[in-house]
Image (cartoon, rainbow, N blue to C red; front, side, top):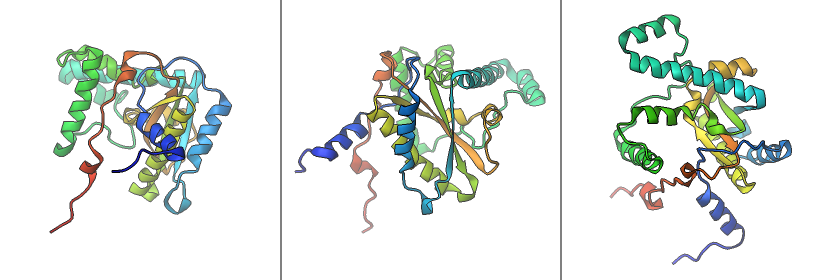
Length: 248
């Protein structure tokens, strides 16, 4: 039987097992020196041939507020079109304002094998929030909070180099894990959000993004509030469930 971790391994075990995605933040700003320290920690992450094939756009203050307004406007248009039938869809196609313009498709059918975990997570979250399965308005409002950055004072947009294909995405994932664990160690909370890659136009308009870099996701960061939503813990399958059996 394995003994309980001690020393540095115990600290790491606690960090990685207690980190949670926050979905409601306090408005308190992050001190610049604290954010710099977290970015320095994340910068030590390994990457393919040390290429570090990712770039960050960090928004706070007025820039963040402007992006929030623009992304929410696009989300509201999309929801209106969804409820409006074919005429609304035709108008959207003609105007194109509100159509997803991200570099990656974020709205797709999950593989059958992954659906149970996805559905269980969604069911657990909405049950905690008291949102019924058929309450489409409440579900839409909860989804909208993604584009409000869950009230976080800072949001980071992560771009990956297209030339390194899937491996730049892999490296960005490693970087994000380091970033989120460092934030957690420093008393901050985070929420990685694939939804923030739905519309890339507003982000590209606010930052000088090289043409070879593609928006893969965003991360809201700040101090977690005491809201009930931050109690949500979807759990994990046992570690052994991820192991492939040996062929016989």
